[in-house]
Length: 216
Image (cartoon, rainbow, N blue to C red; front, side, top):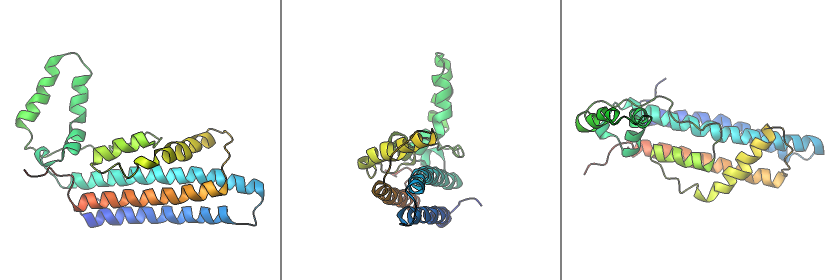
């Protein structure tokens, strides 16, 4: 079902986040269980970190592209788009011109800005990518393109890049990574918190129409 209203967007995000939280809660309960052997406990911690990361990346990607789908459904003109979404719409035109030394390829770009801003915009579908490694740098790029505030995550860069992404990569690549229960519980709470923040930011951006150019 296409996402045409802010309510549909909210329902999509809430439904997706609900099953993720339920699964993460189940894993947290297993990690906290006392009647588990040390070897099994270590295996739970290692798998738990990987699943934490997968839900972090999976939800950010789904939420970002769901918001993009919502904006696409508004059928706005290029002139009505906020600068971040206009940049996304213009990406392919600029990419083609950039990859050559021929100044003539910039002519269509100039023509666009001179005469085509009143046309209905064409935004790419599912254009938001995490590049399979959702680092703080990639998260900032995503928030910039969506027009939402990155500062809420700026103090969590070490957590995202080292405790979450780096540890997940080490485990996924077959390396032995030591992770204790206390660290996992802390990471679990932080990830849940960031997921809630990202959902709220997307929902608020839709309600407040931050995807539109501010009228002067």
